[in-house]
Length: 312
Image 1 (cartoon, one colour):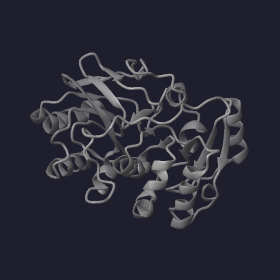
Image 2 (cartoon, helix red, strand yellow):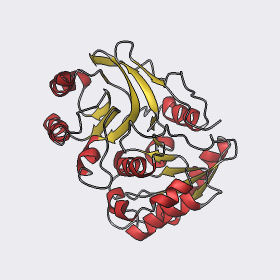
Image 3 (cartoon, one colour):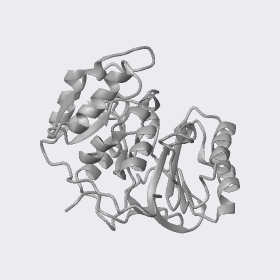
Image 4 (spheres, helix red, strand yellow):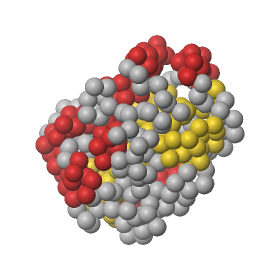
């Protein structure tokens, strides 16, 4: 079933005051200040439960695979957990893909929030369950890291159900957008970290891009590597059928430097391309609801939600 054939996905209920976030570390390790994290949630009217793997480190991984997998499964299965927030990216999510219990996740739908390496989980979960997830700020670098207000505000507004069908996903006015290729298109918003989209080709997390609005971002990749990654997607047939492209932050590469490559890759497809969107390894890091149907207008430089994210 491709993304055009899916039933429009929803999550069961928006977060209410007192909701509990499960903190997991499915990828790399990070030093976690438990008191600071607990206080951050309490000040906003929420609670949190920190799972064991978030306190561990095993080289470049946040603990053994089995621990990180168990934490993820436990957070989905626990009815007391209302949303699952990843602590950081790095590397490690791919190692869990062939062990994920998609039926467990399907039976217990709830927001999963993260970006970067967490892209592997976003794409796998959408492909096998159709569930919405959120490309948004993670605990350490973003929410506890003092990032600009839109990082937190966009995440909590979407999780709280305050962004409804027909409303724009707001982009901070202080940061200019670039209309690389003009046009208007609608479709499910899918994608994430470009390196991970390439790495998961041929796996159970391979992204089905048919009919989608493709979102891409990356960090620490020089321009020629971005070219290689986009060419890899093109040669794999993953750009055929894409309806539009939203280009997030490519840390270290300006939009002006990226624009000729974007035109070279996407102009033959005749799709709108809007670049400079502040989502990814950047400050602020605007939340995006992956799997939700959106309308991209690269002329007006808007991204409009075409569905509610939660059931009424």
